[in-house]
Length: 78
Image 1: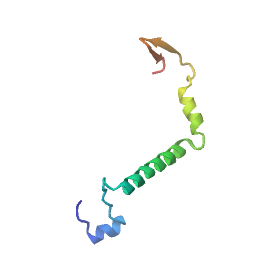
Image 2: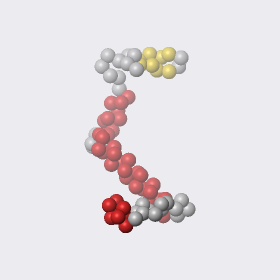
Image 3: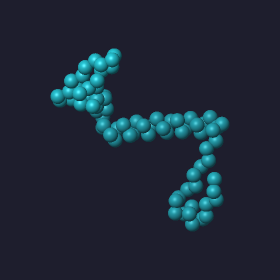
Image 4: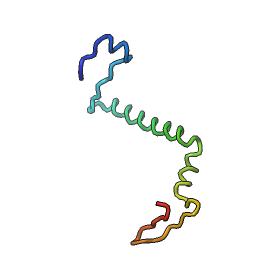
């Protein structure tokens, strides 16, 4: 990691902490943060209706017809 001057440190706030992949506590914290961030992202995108949005993704769109071609369902909208 490169050295950061005091001016840069003042501008950017804090120095990035180093990742120690052998430290279980730190890796667990990163995993928990990742899970929390994915939940927050999902809430920002879909609000509290994520389950309904997920169901709507599987439904047919207006005018869409799916047919079986070589063992796979193919849409006429794709």
